[in-house]
Image (cartoon, rainbow, N blue to C red):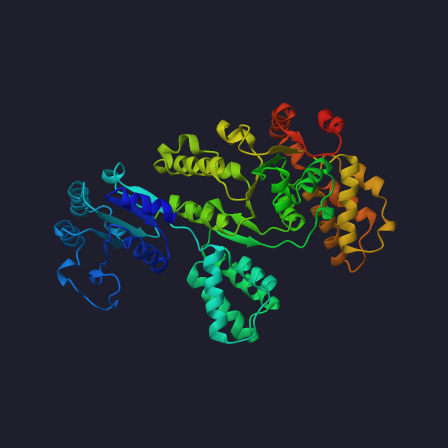
Length: 503
């Protein structure tokens, strides 16, 4: 990104929009670029101090008459020497006709000169009048090399024992995805808690990192203790995942394999789609980030929703390799086609941005999405190339239902020999895995209220009192099966069972 920024400045681009939370690190980068030939002076503007030359104390006000953005832009226009003018947090003035007009005047005035205005803000909000003139760049999170400098500085300050190369690498990887300031703080916290930075303090860094990820309210760092063995059936899907358990390793790259892009899991609600996504994180040994699409949408400010998505995707990329989990994606993007009438086109723009990111991303972020209503998803989302595979999870067959019963009974009791699994399997035909679990729990509550151990008859009575989703929504389930028959790969072990698709 630094190279691209340098090229744009050297090519005399008059207006650049730099999206970042890290003002200080971005300023340092721009200061280094300002020293290139021809040398330029670097000025920063804030609404508190106006124009200040870079390197001067922050509390110094050199040009008190430039506190207003219009006056600051006019001041930059009048300067004859080459310069870079950084305007911080100008986005609140997005709807100001005077500010927009001044910026357009500056663009016209800067042509053929070595002068550039850089709008620096964590929020991307470009006035429509400037969309054809501005170049938008996302300032990347610190690299491993930059984090290494932060860690070395903290180790020098602590004056502790040197750490091994292996420990250093673990501490650096644990901090990937954090800003430079956040990394400094978590390293300090780890040192304060343990007295020094060692291998055991990696967990402290990771726990703090999880809190920082959760703080943005859009990404959630998920942890799952369950393994694939706790998922009943779905052998084809499990086999596919196990084959790719080392797909993000250097050995796979040397072998010539591409990095997996993602997978879409369609199916009947309650059949283990979300659980598969969670257990894959443990199987692959990768962090699992859940993207809450409901929180992406923010109507409080124009452009805020798009900025939320960009920041979330940028964070996921910065800590890659990682799994990005989007549950029930049909609810998030199902109405994007006609969103202009309902939300001013926000859903369409969000959907377009996400599709573009999926198509062009180079970072090893594996997108794992689930959906229940496939007919709501736009056609371009399902075409080949977006995902490596589209799996269909059907209602469990007899063998899978027996395995599901066995898993849930073993979770709660050791003496499961007293249960007739064959009978239970027949009674719950047409039930999803979630419905089987809830039937068992309901039977346990019944017996617990009577002060006794639950029995086979309690489970049968609970199941017979339940109307499964396959009956209450039979038309929807049938339509989903018909769609998936020729368009998706069955997640169950037996293709014949999938093709039979009968209750």
